[in-house]
Length: 243
Image (cartoon, rainbow, N blue to C red):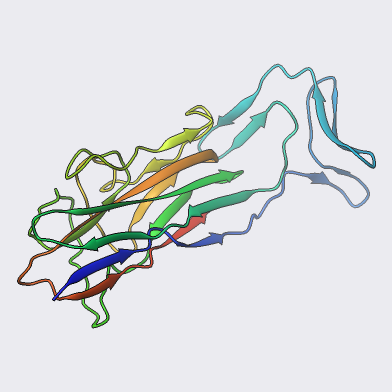
C-alpha cells in the first residue's frame, strides 16, 4: 500500500463582483464632470498619436481618507472605476509518499488588491486531499498543532517554525500605509493549523493596495487508519468584493 499526495496548491480561482450602485462622475443631461478637483487645475485624459497624459497641479494632500461610510482619495488624478484584482500563482506541490513518522508540508501563493471597494474576502471552497475511492484526509476542524502519526490536513497563512520552517506572513505592497489585507481568525497563528470548506482565510475592510499571501499546508497520516491511494486536491479560492 502507498499513500501519496499531489497537492496542486491554489491553482483555481473565481472572482465575484457586486456591481456598483453609484458612480464617482457628476453629470446632467447636457454636461458631465468625469472627476472633480480642488486646486489650480488638472487634466483627465490628454492624448496625442504617441502619448497619453493625466496630470494635476498643486497637490498638497495625497492618499486615502476613510470613515465608516465614505472614502476619498486625494492627490494625483485617479481612475473612477472600481475593481478587484485576484491573482493566484499556479503551482503543483508534490509531497511524495507520506509516512506516519513525519509531516508533509507545502506552500502556495496569491495576491489581492481592490479599489473603490468596501473590502474583500477570500474563501477556500475545496474539499481536502481526496483519493480515487473518495476518501479524504481528515480536515482539522479546530486550530491545532501538527501531530505526526495522526491523520490531519490543515493550513494557515503565516510564517511557521513547526513542524518545519516554512510559510510567510502577508506582505503589503508597497507598504502598510497603502495596503490593508489581513488574515482571518483561525488562520493567523504560527504553528497552528485548521481547514474548513467555505472558511474565509483572508480579507480587507476597505480599498487596499496589493497584499501578498502565502498558504502553508500540512498533511499527516496514520498507517493503520488512513486509506491507501493517490490523494489529489485542486485548491480553489473565491475572492468577493463589495462596491
